[in-house]
Amino acid sequence: MLLRVSTAGQLDGYGLEAQEKDCRKWARTAGSALGGVRIVKVCTDGGITGKASDDERPGLHEALSLVAAGDADGILAPNLDRVARELTVQEATLSVVWAHGGRVFTVDHGEHIPDDDDDPMRTFVRQVMGAAAQLERGLITKRLRNGRKTKAAAGGYAYGAPAYGQRASDKVLTVDDDEATVLEQMRAWQAEGVSIRGICDRLNAAEIPSKRGGKWHPTTVARLLNPDARAAAREQAAHARAAEREQIKRQRAERLLSRLT
Image 1 (cartoon, helix red, strand yellow):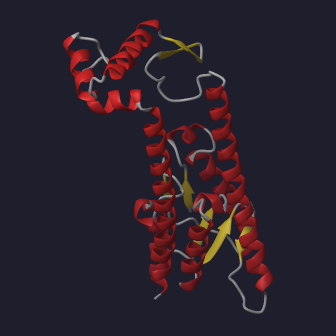
Image 2 (tube, rainbow, N blue to C red; image 1 turned 180 degrees about the vertical axis):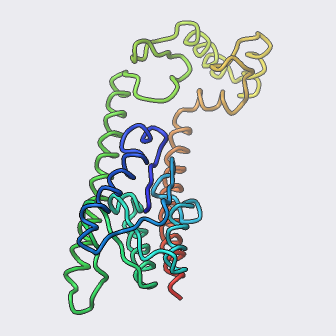
Image 3 (cartoon, one colour; image 1 turned 60 degrees about the horizontal axis):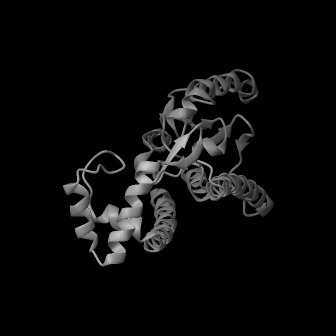
């Protein structure tokens, strides 16, 4: 049996206990039509995202190892999303289990029959359903992200720590008068030609605390006084993270499929 929750918060929702309960119920009821299903091991990935690689998914790795060693006849999970969120990892996992003569069952579907060259529609339907689920998750994430951006643009407190010069009050961003005055002075020094490091030294000499109450650093001052450069850096970092995620997904699928050889 393979169970997964992606965050600690999910431990209070459809967590490991609820998933195990559903799987055991399925084994007692639907499993009886198969001549009985005996759960030999419960493999869990608690608080681990389904996007993690198999090396970071000890539960998934253990389940696949049990099937490969012949200690288990297959895998049972609440749904394929609990096996992995990414369609490529789901497909790779199915391929590994089937290659070792194992079977894959989920509570919401029953048995996932191995691919058959004479029945390409079987593979097509499964992959389309998986892609649709992945698209839905992406759209939900995008709506939440856009909602936060819209709220922030309207002056609302969307997420994260308030910027210097602002504070959160009843989940609404308001001006912090003291910090706003300091920020205005910093801009005045910049207009006079004082360097970033010089502004930092003046703030520390005057014992003006930073947002977190500590000393000022040139990088912090630069981010406050050059927001355009900061936005460009964030965009560049976002592109780099997206490229890295795509590379990780490919490597993850290749790693799982390599077990076939």
